[in-house]
Image (cartoon, helix red, strand yellow):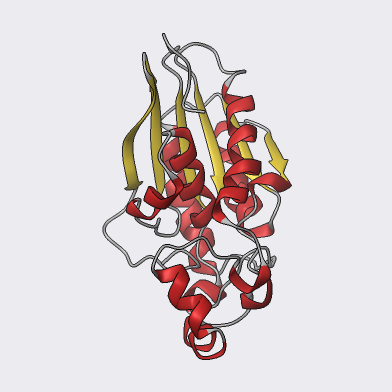
Length: 217
């Protein structure tokens, strides 16, 4: 699923949502619908101005509030409509959602340790990373197919979902996806289409270095 030979020069910008209170508190969000903080809104507005300079042709986003609010800032600058998809939500993390990393390590020690080792884990009884890629990557590709040659698609989603989608589109084995570091709030990664498929052109771009606060840190 890494593009097709003789690619059309399309570009994918995978943009993580702005800061939430649970990011700051290091609570697992998963699919819990948590709003942006005031800082998160400011991050989205700043980043939207930068991304508008890329002249995107289309915007798609997760239907969770934090992604919708982030995407709305780019829509306001570009005049583009946003198409929302539940398939672009963050990884469902079951019983882990709402807990801090410290609480998870205390209550689900073995499972947490296995996840940190890079083993396939249904965190809190939730989704595997490969299942997230199974639902998200096809949505991204379906919208990419609608782009004109050289066109740009902005995908507004979540740290874990973006990482697994990038791994799938690059054709990497799932055990190697951890090599892609997390995204800071309102930062993005860029994939470009070449003759041999998708290539990673930028990762965690868009700001001065900031800590990665979220489920994927």
